[in-house]
Image (cartoon, one colour):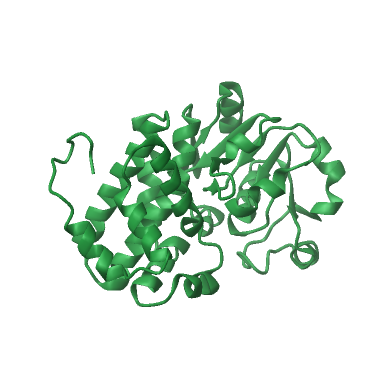
Length: 325
């Protein structure tokens, strides 16, 4: 395939490398002129994954890529959720779009697939830390689309000996998993920052998965998606990986750093963008998300320790009683 990867961040770069390794003709496209110049001159992304040789991968600025967008067989988008809508608006061409972005649109509170009605759309999700993918370590992901033929084609074109790809028809569930797991990872990081131990962290992750599933079911998703790679798999990785941005941000906040300071140190923290959107979505469909609500309260200036007490003091209930809380 001829592929354009829009977004030369860490994951976009690693995924471009993965596609090139499968024999596809890949061009990284970015709005940062310095980043593109560095890619062209050195064959490396010196800001992200600087040790990775990007053999056979081209690079263009967005303004230079109009003709490329018209010709590609696949457009891959790997930008933060807050810039996704602007990045895809008005892009020329009609090729299928594969989203690597794990989040929701903060302005419309919509799933990202709803912003791309004019193109065939798919999303790739799973426990996929870019450094490990770039190093060729074994990993797996799901590709979800309403278009089963597109999903099957992408599965065949992306999968390799080190990157196993499954098809999942539940686009709603996979998109919600990608956003919600980052919010739970913020809370898991706060548990680490407070030194509350592995029992507390495992409990939080398990109840976090329960509330992710509860929201998904209310929005029309399938329960088994949340037990799969996009749900439980990505949640485990995001909550435990020492360098994961959301977990690290939560840990800093648990140690007394403000959310703003954590974002300044780390950069893009998708869980901070997704938390209020998910909370609003939950209110619309009438379900409770206690952990997400607590994260929103902390992001608004609440004390982490006070919210731990509040979560632990919730009314006792059966684990699977209805409504689960």
